[in-house]
Length: 270
Figure 1 (cartoon, rainbow, N blue to C red):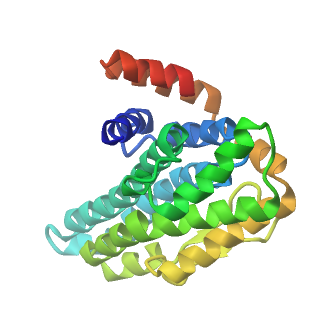
Figure 2 (cartoon, helix red, strand yellow):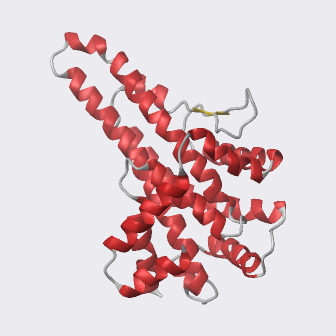
């Protein structure tokens, strides 16, 4: 089982790409959602998060360049602040990459070994239980109820916040020693493309886990209210061709993974 999980994780690392390749990760997320027979909603919402983040990071870098202009009067201060901003942004991109890898690995590992009594050593028990529901519905070509989809999403979302997102965001915030921009960067205002007009996720401080969980569940509730078909179609509004991105990711995965068993797994699962 350890080897199986490591193989799935290695596939996920290749597919997720570098920290800058947010579109690739959106494609991986989207195809995980499709592979679950549209029952595992976490990857669908995460695909929106990855695509939204692409524009957010570009805006943040432009804002930082503007706000750093007064620092020109102090030698070496502006480059130092811009470097810190870049490191802060990269830390958030790395969080996105790690969550994508974890989502991919846990999904495909649980297909193979989710029923094994020791599988919780590799995937947290709440996630395994939720993925078990997803795989049962997938095998029987069923759709989970809204209540079950929320149960799976919440188990997955809370686990990722505790194990990956929370510690990484706190560390990045502590290392970002530009008070003004750190304050602005943590006060997120998110509007995914499936949100109704004038609907936003507001964060007073993104490093607070309670806010992230509350807004994550709100993003899911909005998705369920507008309909998951609408949420899926609205991925096109980011002007990204996810199928092409995914094909490129899949090609890179099979090229970069030398093991025949690993290549077979990618072909079979994807």
